[in-house]
Length: 327
Image (cartoon, rainbow, N blue to C red; front, side, top):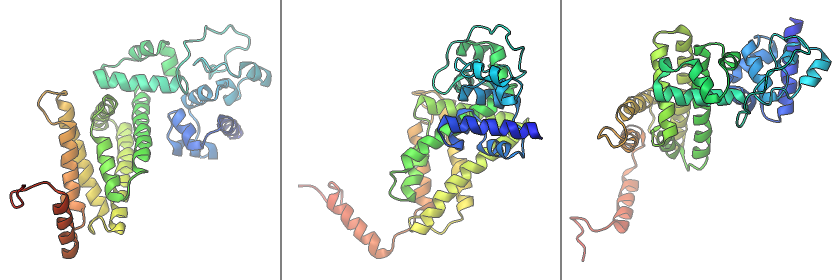
């Protein structure tokens, strides 16, 4: 128990040195923020792979995190993870020759590089067609390094999905910050879900593999349920705010969120089932259909006076119509 407490204290030290919030650090090491919190409080043990990723992100020796290296060895090894080679979690022999450092990974270290390449390869080939050797080759590293950070395929899929979720959350926060009301927030959420860009298509393809795995794996099924609860809760909260603002009717936010997210999922599958320009459902059509749902099922109906004023305003600005011919 004492060792577990000491490990947590050293991880806290690494997070403090990183100069970021605990949630942001969890994103960098591709870890569920709640798991990080529980591990720091002592109610959960860090896994060796999690400590390897923490060591990599914090530029410290993993053996020091585990308490398996001496202070002197830890001081000498600090920074040894910068090239992606976080110290051996088993605390290999002190003074043993180190292998050549692998190619330095971009951004926040080796774990995020592995996850980004995993997302790309899953989108291109499908989860079951991607081998660990393929990911290692894409990262210009060894399969041992991949297993060091992510011991199994389930961990890789979880990390890939979590990365997609974090990316989506960051984009969502940036887009809805400028929204005037909850209705505009919901339109922005819908636009972010429509697979217009290659990155959005990649993330949807990862989601589709998650669905297939969730139907066969209890562990992945729990992951799927957790992520969908979070996503539906986000949509429901926007709808609830819209009701309070008067822009949405007094609907059941939870049930309306379920219906809208189901519509988004179904249309996204149709968009992805045909490539761009193949004549199938487009991202634009998906966007329009989902917004039509918002207009017909959620948007509050205006009172008679407001509706008349809106029509008059529209008539003043609109071009000629059949009832209002031009000169």
